[in-house]
Image 1 (cartoon, rainbow, N blue to C red):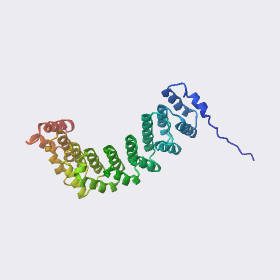
Image 2: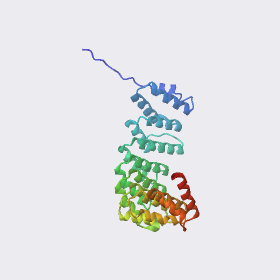
Image 3: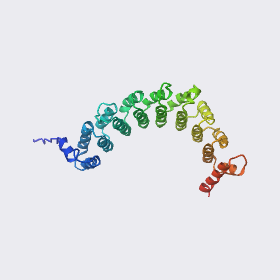
Length: 313
């Protein structure tokens, strides 16, 4: 009996690099040649080519293009290279800014894989306070998009860390918690809003994000309601707007009456968002009230008329 002996073709990377014009053509043309290779090679060979190039090419523009090309295949072997690149193990780009931007791009690509195996590396870079802030922001975002519950507690620690100098990192960590949507994040976030108000008042952006997260997770309890109610009186108009949206999407019986008070807010944009929220909850009645009764601002009356014309006629 004869056994067919199939020998896998050994890829000639030097020949591929030459044919794609790495040494002679502009990066965008090189990338076109690389994309065209997918017509001539099997999927496993394409992955092998991309992986080789990701470990050996030094040009930022070409590397960025390869990451995007490889992203459509989502191979575990490519993910391992992306994670190593994030950790600074596989990278030879000489320009510091390009190096950082490339690691950020790799981090975004990692998030597309939705693979929990990368969570440890993302948390390591997020918690490294000496790491570039762009990379830390990208890691927080990636953790949110992957959505693994293992990241919830570390993300909460970042949000409540008073020694964390970057409010943007805190904000990104809070946003990630909203993307994950795990209910276990609610109590710690509520505690953050309840404690040390003088300290947190300096971080209005962070408060905006926390209120937004509480609205997305949408758990009904007295402590959350009090935080949302208090936020309607916050100095930041955006915090008040986020509280209105969270109440609109909630199941609290008091939601309508609390939002109604914001129709008299000093900020016109807050008034407008309160009107829209009440319209979504109650329908046309609130528009008729604002238009016909005294005590409402002219701008709010005009907004009510516009909504009426657009949606009710």
